Image (cartoon, rainbow, N blue to C red; front, side):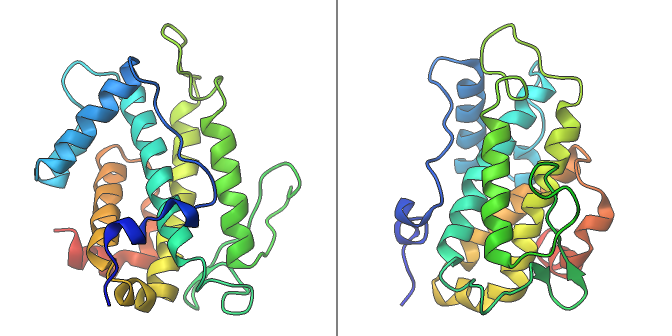
Length: 216
């Protein structure tokens, strides 16, 4: 039986609380604007475009945080099917393997299971988006000069979650009735990163055929 979206995105299945925008801030207003556009049924290619007069870094920041929340929820739902036994390597089929490096505990690219990789990835992103020096929330505090580079790295690694979920757990997505919602989230993500050239096209190769099929 298909699950309703409330079940598919049950907060109890997530790794961590959602990162939220403070009401009254410009970032919160931008977030509301983006969500309103999404719910209006507008073409996703149009939805991701920078609104006139808005700061591009604010727009990117809002979307990076929102994609983190959404993709974290998607993987949280899949996590019972993604175990040390089923996924001993973080991969995207036989051709692609992703190793973890964080310049902290893992200073060199290290082979991890998919669950271990995902856990470290979500912790790493959460630390970054809660860092006021990287994602400033106070008015008048500028973004760092390397802000878009940091976002590129975050989004590149989040894309790998899609790669793993689609290639290794697509049957589970279908059985839970979540295919349409996950596809919409992927299309939104894909159009956004293409609109602002935020991920190297080579990173997109694992899902190239699927992307050509669903992202017209």
